[in-house]
Image (cartoon, rainbow, N blue to C red; front, side, top):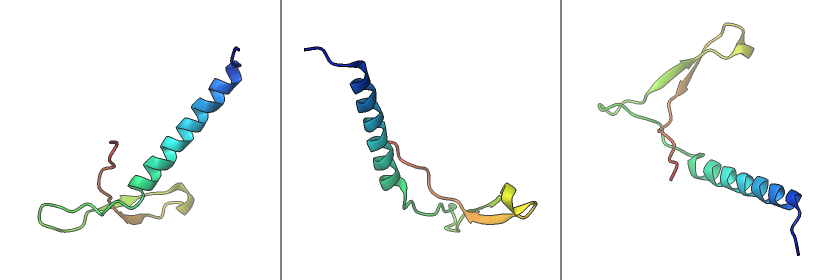
Length: 66
């Protein structure tokens, strides 16, 4: 019995979706990055929808890929 090519395409998309969900759940609640002195790191963002306004956001730790 031969398998159809469309079934492999669906399985690949489904696997990709599951991996993305696992990555999001694992890295969704990362801690805030700190300097060597123990102070919290911040970054200034300039989103387009603010039309020139800026926002200060805390910098998160690097995500883990393992």
